[in-house]
Length: 325
Image 1 (cartoon, one colour):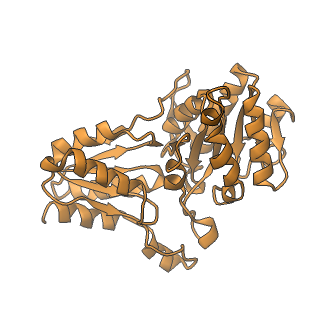
Image 2 (spheres, rainbow, N blue to C red; image 1 turned 45 degrees about the vertical axis):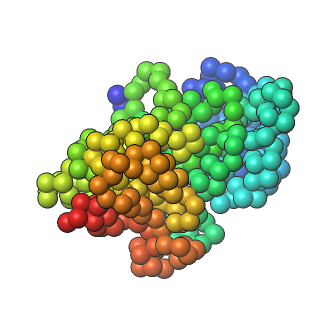
C-alpha cells in the first residue's frame, strides 16, 4: 500500500486504463497543458499525447456531444467538467443522448463514457458554484452515479466506471483532491453499486457518501466517548443504490440517520427513507432523521456557509434524538 492524494488516485486510474485500452481518452477544459484544473491529469499529456489528452474550448454542450458520438463508434471517453455546476450547460447531451441512446437504438449502441468532476460546496464559491447534483442525475434511467469519499475508493471505482459499457457520472470534490489515503500498488477495482461499512456499530446506522461523510466520522468519535456506537455506511454509489446493506444494518441497530450534502427536497436521503420504511418499518425504534443543507442557495459569507452546510454537531443531535437521549 502507498499513501497518495485523492487527485493522484484519479490520475492513476485514468492512466492505467489508458495504457490497457487505446480507446480510452480524456477530454475537458485545461486537462492537458495545465495538467487539469485540480492537477488530476498531471503528466498525462506528456505520456499519452494531445490525441488522447485533449484540451477543449469552454463549451460543455459541444464537447459532451462530441464525446458521446465518439462513444457510439467504440471509444471510451472520459469527460472532465471543471465543476458539475458547468455540466448544466451540457446536461441536454447527458440526459437526452448518453442516458437514452442504448434504449432508443434497441441496444445497437452502448455509450461507454465517464463524466467526472467536482460536486457540492467547496467553500466561498457562491450560489452557482456550490450545488450538489447527485440526485438529479440519479433520477434519470440509464445513468450510473458514483460519489467516492477517499482515494482508495476513488481509484477502484473510477477504473470500474471506465470499463463500464454504460454512462457513469463520477462525482468528486475540490475539497478532497488533497486528501491522502492508502491505495494498493497492484491492480484492483471496486464494483459499482456496492456500499461499504466504514465503521461497525450497534446503536444507530448513519448513511452518507462523498466528502460530507467526514462529519459522520467526527460525530461517531464524539459519541463513542458517551458509549454510543455508530455504524457508518458509505454508499460510494448513489445509482444503483445498495439497499441491501442499508436494510441489514438498520435491522441490527433499529435506528437510521442519513447525512447528505444536498437540498432537502427529493434527494438521495428521501429515497433511502422511503425504502427503509417500506421494507424495514417493523425494525425501526425511532423515526428516520435525514440531515441536509438548508433549503436555500448556498451563501457566500463563511459564517452563513457554516450554518448552511450539515456538520458533526447536527449528526450528534440527530443520533441522540433517535436514541431518545
